[in-house]
Image 1 (cartoon, rainbow, N blue to C red):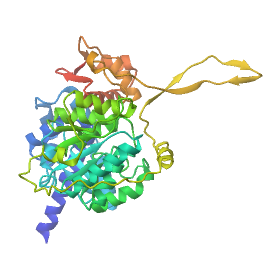
Image 2: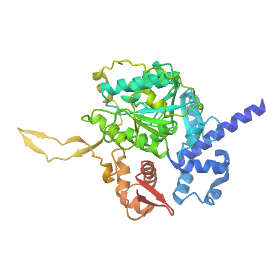
Image 3: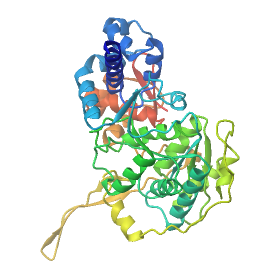
Image 4: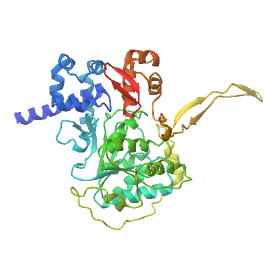
Length: 431
């Protein structure tokens, strides 16, 4: 009994130390994997202490500042919330942590799980992603592909958003398969509460997972950082519908870096919602018209597929309800900016300033960077950098007019989006 209690306590402490590391270095940090593989455990890392950390050649000054500012009490509180809410927490050092996710460059320090996480290393998984504001055609395609993949034994992965993601999840659930939704916020966040029924169904048929603690709100910069996990736990990524600057294209770009298969459904060349998918096909993604196009590209050694004839159903969506739900999302797909107009008098009534959505056009051939998913502070930091010479942290803080902690978080965000890279000596440069 004493031995079992001690082992349980050691596992809890290991989880807490890994939570501490993830919270200190920031979500998406590429250092976490290196640290935990070097020290072998979060426990040994934490107990080695600051003086020991300073001797490691892979910590720069910024990393050490973050670690010194980190508080173990915060990690303990996060673990306590998870235990009270019956959320599972899987640290990187656990045998239960998916090996497929460990293989990426920047896996999270811990995975928060609500539901029952399928054994990702025993089966093939495919991510189905696309725009929130999808067409009825796109939703039907996503639903059918999700259904047929699940019916063939494939785990269906998505980001859990409205539109294409939800349709694919519905398909997987109706086929009686396993589904996983990777959230860009904590489980207790009110974001997409309108999708609560689907979330509950997902937990019964698989799991909700996140690298963000339960009380983390839906912050725009967290979603593109989250996308590396969607592709990281998948053998391939299928994009069904995507506009020119859709977040699902970030997932596809990350998946390509992770050497995953990229699939895309062709669309109407006159439709805004097909620009992204058609461009992916032009740039080498495999064109998909049915589930067999996907299955033939996957290794069958670890999974036996039953190649059945595609099941097709016209899944009925209430388009007006979907539009209404989409407006309830707290994380906009476009960046809201003010267009300032001078106040004028018209029939004795003042016309006020108005706001509009600015759509940034993206031309990959010219190498123009897509900044549509960068946070407001992230843009300040990005604009303070140079593409011709590296800039030290203190200069970035001065130029961006932000505190050190915010700048460090933004630099992590920009590095995940492949917009910047860190250099030795705590210096940064635009990619």
